[in-house]
Figure 1 (cartoon, rainbow, N blue to C red):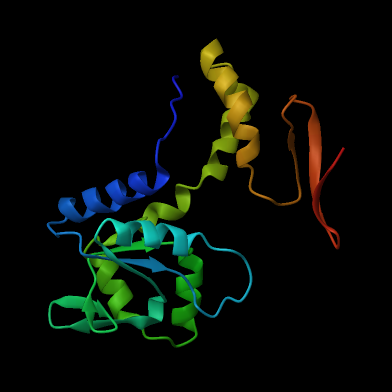
Figure 2: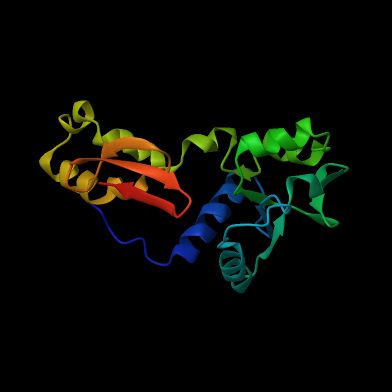
Length: 186
């Protein structure tokens, strides 16, 4: 396994959404970064990434799943047609909005038309899924070089939850949530 530097991550993101737009027959003019605008905590990289898209000539904005509308054959946001939506929200959060009686016809149309990156299967593309690569039954199937890469990279992709797992030295450790934050319990 060869690991190479990514280069400019903003260019990589631009290429991702540009290629996706082309694959569904759209010219990339607008990108919506999908978030629940009622969330009041956490940080988001959206302003930086969207600024980089705008520097490349793409209109980019943060949108809430409830903000899309159907206008004829187009899905719009604030009256503008939307080419690609980057989903920075889990499906369970979108489903909760719908259970809460939010109207999501525009969002449903975006999924049907394959205008959303990550697709419906996107909740499975999270880096925390790489944790399975540390299982002994998986590691023994990898080459020595692949095992070195996994040991160097994968321990830092863990989903934060209370669990026993292997640390960077392969020694077991437990990560616990506490009032002081989240820290490994050695």
